[in-house]
Length: 225
Picture 1 (cartoon, rainbow, N blue to C red):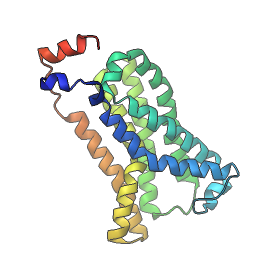
Picture 2 (tube, helix red, strand yellow; picture 1 turned 90 degrees about the vertical axis):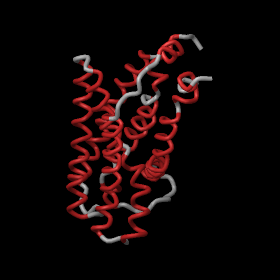
Picture 3 (spheres, rainbow, N blue to C red; picture 1 turned 30 degrees about the vertical axis):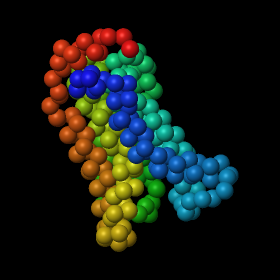
């Protein structure tokens, strides 16, 4: 079996979406537990007076993040996009508003929830990240409206990378607390590192050279499975 043929086996297109879903699991579970608490269920997370006083932004943020993280992961399947382009477009019409709900609710919580961990530095970073995520989504939508697919792809990858920061922050916060402790500055640095890592990976994906498609590859794609 040739390398080109093996690159297009059914399972090979699902590695990235599966990894993205796995990265989202812990934040989504945490968000679900918070929603259960707000609905009157048992308390399993530390009390957050800011959330208790104004729960609606958290509800919007968690629900939007669930749709955006899981649905967005599927958009990274080249096989799915190739075989079902109409699904890709329809899903995008749902995912862009979901991503905007995530970004704008995050912006609202940054501006109006006082006393969040991380101090002024993390407050400023959250402000930048929320604004950048919303801007990336708007720019990505505008790009596809003018049929600029490379720009659309780039802006949507950037938006998704920032929105998925909470998954990477599970790792960076754990490492940060072990190495730097739990001070205000260390919290800001470890949380910000999650977004920085995701942004760097996104730029690498966007800018890396695309592999050349051989005749065997094009034939394999055109052959019904």
